[in-house]
Length: 444
Image (tube, rainbow, N blue to C red; front, side):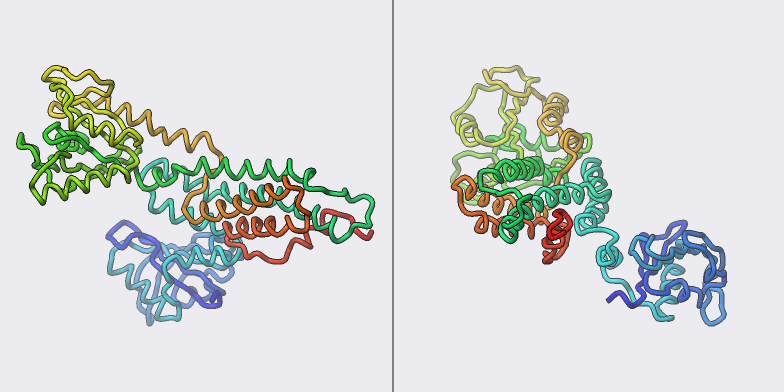
């Protein structure tokens, strides 16, 4: 319900110079006035006011209070932000005063929820707010900012506009065939517009495939036969001794993990057990886990001992990873190179991994994905709904190619429309008739 006043601490619950307590709801300025000594009832919106928070006549804290009136607020309703001193106790005390006077503790995300319900933002923008809070790198931040500023909304609105032109033309043709100025549509005349719209959708779906890599990082598996330097490479990349490094084959029997950021590219590193034939039951379990991870990885670093000729195990691993996104890493170049194989040459022991880092940056140019594409979906929900919209439109296009009557085709177009609206959190209302009369001067 939006008829009550909610309150929450908007800053970290740690000691700091200031804390901000956010209040939102009907008449919340008058509500705060009950326990604030400054005069804010007649003050204009977007002003800062000095005074004290009081409780039963006692001063609690010296504060600055920001007031926001009308619809020009984040939540689309009256808001107040109390800037108090940032001690944990005093912040909690001011919050307690708000609740004592009748405010309710906000639920998680409730301020953004109210912004959505009051029409200040759509669902894609609300999701972008969450994304920017949890962003792990600059690329994820840039992506979230595009969402907050309406990037996705504008794209979906454009798709809806293209689609509704097709639908309304069909509906006019079906319902008002007596009007001479309405084009007699056929499946073949609708096909170019529908095909162009489908191409737009599929292009964005293709561009959005790497969103998971941008937001969550690249799942990177280090694989190789025992004692080729996998753990040394992991430690060099992480710049710490996370894995045990010895000359004994089979030392790593389980999975060792860690994360590294390379110019904003997050690699979620996994060092696997060396893959070889073994009678050791525990080691063999690790080997099987390693093989499974190859098929789950976004990037495979296949480590080869460059100081030795290729073994049968190396050849098996080259075959195992041939269809994966991989980099062949030729290690131990400090001991001389005997292997005849194209790959990135390093010495993990001596921390000579610059060429490998450069190759990873080239392979995953995530910055270009953000910069070169105006419209990118930011999460699985949006992608799923656009895929459904694309599938419905594709069915309509196929029907058009078969010259199916337009009154049968329109069902798939309606389904496409519903999925597009759902991306923005809009309910699929029966609003197409309004759009139809807006665009055609029928009955004038």
